[in-house]
Image 1: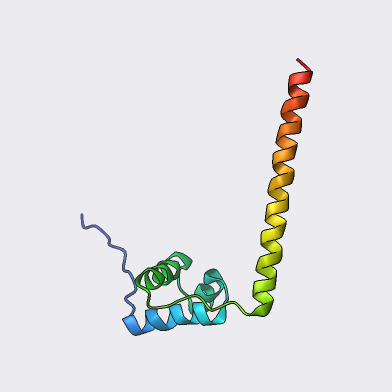
Image 2: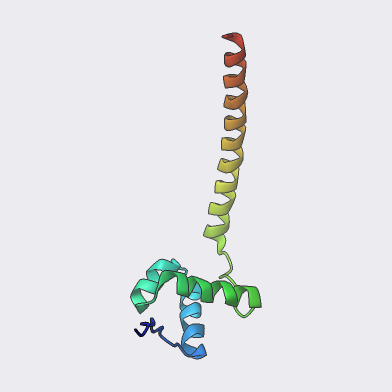
Length: 99
């Protein structure tokens, strides 16, 4: 009996490059762009990752609003880590007191 083989779509390098550029320049999630183009999310993600590793594309630079949001999120992350560490120590102390 003959084996059935999956047929994979073949895309030109130009199509791949344009799809990657669309992800990078639009700032939209890979999943959303892939859905719009009728591509598998993993396939487009692989193309984007390969292009970034090769240095052929770079992420869009942050604008002033993005930099402010990044700063705010970094500060929040720092605060949450401090709170988490404090709560871990408090839980350990309470656990040792109750033995």
